[in-house]
Image 1: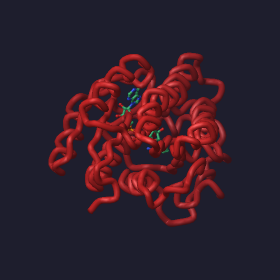
Image 2 (image 1 turned 90 degrees about the vertical axis):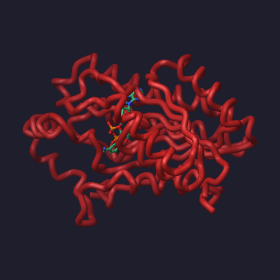
Image 3 (image 1 turned 135 degrees about the vertical axis):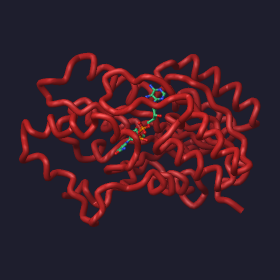
Length: 270
Ligand SMILES: NC(=O)c1ccc[n+]([C@@H]2O[C@H](COP(=O)([O-])OP(=O)(O)OC[C@H]3O[C@@H](n4cnc5c(N)ncnc54)[C@H](O)[C@@H]3O)[C@@H](O)[C@H]2O)c1
């Protein structure tokens, strides 16, 4: 019997990368899945944008595990569209127990080459989008009498990431939101924790991402050593993050709340 048997999880950014890994892992553990993703062009990012084919592949992988999955092409910045989809899906699947606010974007840029548009879209997606996700999911957990909310922050939400003032600010905001929601939702037996990956092998590293990072780093090479992992592994796999998220979602973590769990090979302390 899986650790999440009979539970239902709502996951954002589910089309690929870590979001897909969360869906597959939770389905393996017995959960049914509700998911949203932009599945389209993401302006300003240097890496390849996800497609509807990516979203459909996540559906196929979950259904192959004999679990139910309901998905919608939806922007986490669109509060009302996301609320409407989640409300309908929860009515269909019967309950909601887990919320994973995973959708996010990352645009490397030197401090003096960061435009107002880049700062704004990062905050809107990584901060407002996470807040929207909790706001549409948490009321159903209150109804269920408890649950687990996991917010995806980053190494940049504990230490910082050079050449990403905007991303660092957004991921620190997620860390703060974790504590603030945990405090108020605790009386409903709802736990709220954040995960803080280091480098993860996802399509976020595709396209021109390496060129963008290299260009930014040339402005201050001394900062390049930051984030060196203690373990001789630079990149985790999405499944490594999914294992931690599934643990936090499960009853094995039933008294863990307001915590900030790193999966970063130790890089935050370098
Ligand atoms: N990959 C890394 O090295 C790394 C490291 C630390 C933290 N993170 C964080 O992990 C999370 C997942 O990233 P990933 O590595 O799987 O990247 P990814 O780009 O492969 O996946 C992110 C998914 O989120 C979706 N998304 C983005 N903006 C959206 C929006 N406005 N509305 C709906 N969906 C949206 C994308 O369409 C995509 O499918 C992000 O929050 C990211 O900041 C990633």
